[in-house]
Image (cartoon, rainbow, N blue to C red):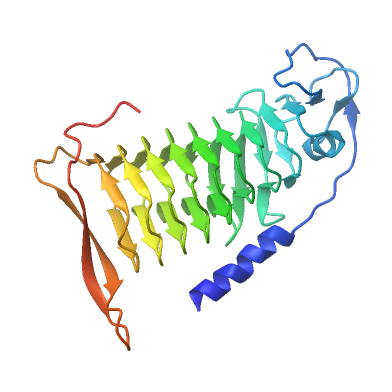
Length: 300
């Protein structure tokens, strides 16, 4: 029943659209182009600068860069990135996209090959709302602060994306994998102080890699639920969570060389719930192991 409900919500993510109005500013356009396409500027005071991020995205083409200054920050917008562009903020601490809980997302990626970096993305904290919703392939979310959202980043039916070097904090769940999301990589992030799970993987999300992250002070560090198999959880610092790791109805995931709160001599058991495979199915205790836990925390 939960799976059906979650699928319905996910379809709402995919169906949402937004509109925006055009504004222009002047000057401040000395940034060197980052990609082979054109560069469009938001904020600042250069001739032809946009005042809304969405307006610049609407006028961009595949391969372009949208560069956002912090002078008009915070940007109270709900943004759809539907082209293969680089969306770059001037400074992740001061270039802010504030969803203001006006939609299910602050930022939604629907095109493949999108790069987003250099932003604080915040305040989509109503139930089911997302800082970033990823519905794409081969996109990169790097070097951002994702905070005060219900789900910091939701990866929905998406593959081969990379989430790296972000600070993901003070959300309900930090990163949420949703249904048939395959081959994604989560690496080098600080995922801390989320009231639910640091990383929550649900429903046939397989062959994802979670490596070299600092996962701390969450209710659950990592929670896997409902047929998530073949995921790799490697070399993470998993520290000071209420429960470091848990799984339910999935047990074929690989845990290797994580640091579990303190030095460990023996293998670390990860205890979860499985099913008997009989009718009626009955829950049973099941155990995975990190056979070679790290003896000291990694420098992440």
